[in-house]
Image (spheres, rainbow, N blue to C red):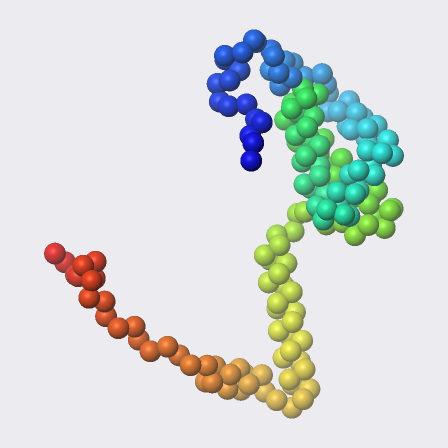
Length: 167
């Protein structure tokens, strides 16, 4: 894997203001930055590319917006502070465009582990309800299953050099 990013201190060994991020940004006003991004997204090709990333590649909206903001910062269009102010507006624009295109888009704000735990809890609740409707008592069923599982015996004491107590 090739790294194309500058190494720390590289800007001190090259011609000053050689890279876009070493020069003053083109846009200093957040409202102008919003207009620039929304005008760019109004181009059907650009919007289609963003929606393709969401639909075909499975990216969430937050990741797409972060990529757009990082690209603008690295090109010297605006700084990171303006990117942080502009990102929610661009996020909402893409979200509404995805909704209009009938694309099921993930915002990217939900913690996936919490979402998975919620899904497992829902499955457990449904299973308990099904067991109750069948006349079984869920706690007794779980107790039977736990009793069937073999519990490993206590591990034998170790006799190696690192197993000794105080030396």
